[in-house]
Image (cartoon, rainbow, N blue to C red; front, side):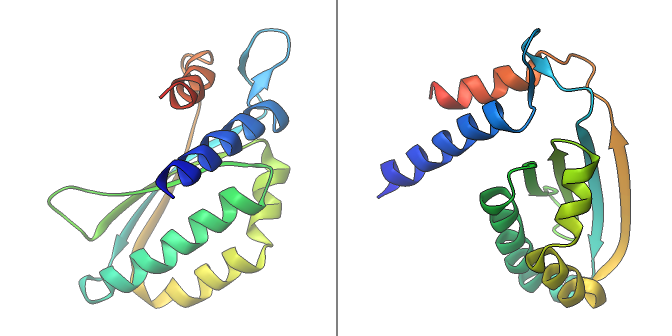
Length: 142
């Protein structure tokens, strides 16, 4: 079962890499139109487990269902479980706008609103645009 799940993830990443503008067809680089963001979220301590379960469900659905969502990768800070970080990567701004309109995102947003103490969205730019495709290649070769 684990092999099937890993194979599905790898095939999904290959599909996304080739179909969603992760690579520029001429240079094998990240598309300059991609939206890359880090979300910094602080959760009230009493909601940690509930928030993590809802976030996990939303992140999985976003990557699985939405072709323009390259990454919704949630992480929790070691030593402080109230600090969540999410690496969000979208094929372009339209993919991000579409993501905000999906039922799974709207459910996530409305059900977690009371759980969030603070939210900071930090837009990023890739320094080395050749690195991201190599990350996907490494995953594929594991």
